[in-house]
Every structure is written in C-alpha cells, then in structure tokens.
Amino acid sequence: MIEKKQLFAREENCILVGLVYKEQTEIMVNEYLDELTFLAETAGVTTIKRFTQKLPHPDSKTFVGKGKLEEIKQFILLKGNINIVIFDDELTGSQIQNIEKELNVKTIDRSDLILDIFASRAKTAQAKTQVELAQYQYILPRLKGMWKHLERQGGGVGTRGPGETEIETDRRIVKDKIGLLRKRLAEIDKQSFTQRKDRGEFIRVALVGYTNVGKSTLMNLLSKSEVFAENKLFATLDTTTRKVVFEQTPFLLSDTVGFIRKLPHHLVESFKSTLDEVREADVLLHVVDISHPQYEEQIAVVNHTLAELKIEEKPTITIFNKMDKYEAEAFDQWLEADVKKEILNDLKQRWQIETKGNCVFVSAIEKTNIDALRQTILNTVRDVYRIRYPYKAEFFY
Image: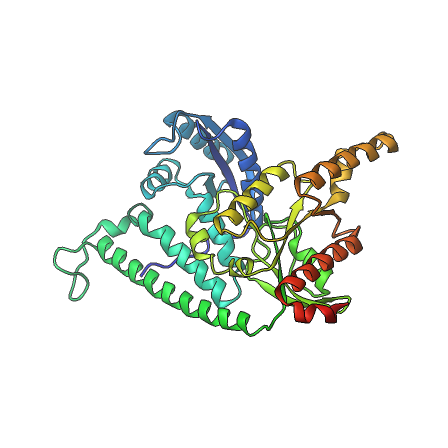
C-alpha cells in the first residue's frame, strides 16, 4: 500500500523554480521564492540557486519551457550536489513524472513541501489526522505520475477486480482511507467541541496572523507559559489554550496555526477544525511582523482568510510586532532623532486610522510596550464581558 514518507534527508540541497505569467508578476514571483527559500530552510534544505521564466501560461507537460528545463538540467549536472528541485506552484502527477525523467532529480512543488513540514510538526492526534488527510487528498490526483509501477496490471487471487488495473485499486484504497480519516477527524472535532464547551463562561481571545510573526512568543509573554517558539515557518500547528488573568479579569488565550500565501487548498479544508478556536473566539489579536518587507500583503492574506471564515467583524486588536527589527532595518545610524521620531509617528498615525485606533506597536523579544498591550487587551475583554456576561463583569473591577 502507498506510504507517504518524509521528503528530505539531512543536508539536502535544492534549486527553486518560479514562473512569471499573467497572474504572477516578476516582483510577486521573487517574493514567493523568498518565502519558498524560508520554507525549504524550515524543512532542513539549503537553496543553491533560483530559476525563473516568463511564459504566457505554465507548460502542460513540464511547467516551464524545454529551454529552461535544459538550463536547469545543465546546472544540476555541473553542480553535482543538487538533491531536489522545488517548484513554487502546484504540479500535476504527469508534470512531476516528465520533469524527473528529464532532470533525474526528485521534484516536488510548494504544496508537497508545506505538507512535509506540517507532517514533521504535527504532535496531537488532531493535527496528525489533518495532515494525513491532506496528504492523501494531494496524492489522489497524482497517483499515475507519482508511482510509475501503478500502470501495471495487478495479478493473482484477490489482487484486483475484473479488468481493474493496479492504479484503480490504489485509487479506491486511497479514497477509502480519505473517508476513514474524515470520520476520525469528525470524532476528534466532536471531542474538541465538548472540551471547549466545558471551559465555562470565559471570554475567548485568539492570536491570529501570518506564519512566523511572533504569535507564540507573545503567547508566552502574555500567559507566562512555555509555548514552543522559533524563527521558522509553522512552528505552531496545534492550538494551545491558556487561562490568563489581567487585574482580576480572566479570559482564555489561544495560539493558532499561522496563515501563508498559496496554502494548499487541501490543508485549508482539513485545518478548518484547527480554526474553530478562531471562529469561536470573542476577540482576535492579529499579530503582524512590521519588519517584513511585504507585511501589508501578509495582513491582506490573513484578512482574506478571516473573511472566508466569516469572522472578520469580531473585535480585533492589531499588534505590530518586531518594532526593534523594523527600526534597525529602516533607520541608519546617521539618521537624526527628530526625523526618526517623525517617521515613526507617521507610521503609527496611519495604522491608528486604518484600524480605528485598535492597534499597538510592540517588540515581544525586547518586551517593549507590552504593558500598553496588556491594558488594551484588558479593556477590550472587559467590554465584551459587559455585553456577553453582564452579571459577571461587575466582579472584574
């Protein structure tokens, strides 16, 4: 039977491939490849070189054109230590088969890379089941290209039905597995719902944001807990919830999985239960890495996802994190203090207007402005208590 193995061994080298076409400009592709480099690094793979090509649309057989594929092949032969080629967009099974046949090197796409990272990070039964379901959903349409032996006829007693090829047998087995995983996930979701229901009448606050913006670090600061945090994508997969008390006012604080551009739609679907914590939250803390060059696009990705979940109207505090890094990268040492102050004031005023005053600028690492953040959260939580549980609110002052 099909077994999905870990993609990467230690100390693997890769090259990245992106395509510039009508839906993706050159600037966008370079940004995507920057992120893909970070994804590869998270998986323990070193990027050696990046290739891009302009085409009206992806080639149906090899995604890139024959000339570009030959250029990639010659580079691999010349370099000699390339173990894997990673494409930034999804490939079909036949494209993978054709590219590997030409390059003689393992070939995957962004979705497969993300799935591998998720598989390595999943710890709880819920996360493991969600990842396994997404993997099988990814595999199903690619069976023919990914397993060349499946084109052979099955033989022997009990190995196939009348006229059924081995690939059709495996397709049926994969579909059955998907059905079983969905049932298992439904049971886990039911248990999780019961657990959430048993938490009592507490206001729920959820940290949301793009991956690697510092949500887990803030979680540790605000809840005084030890949630796993590191400078890698998808450091947190499993939702962590802690009871927090600010000035006699209790609430539940949850850290959730980070969002990302081009997240495989299978993962979006299978991870909806992970986002139940976000759906059921009373207050959202949208964490933003303001030092990131594309932080505004990351905000848009998160807002789009929240809109898809139909929860964009919840009370939201935007937390602009990593201000220390932003200042270090945006200002040189010769910049006058008055000019620096004016630029920072303009930045803060702009986002105060954009968020209708619901934003705070902090550095979780440097613990800068955390008291102001705590006070903002406290004020918002108390406002929600007044509306949701007015008979309890009087006890929190």
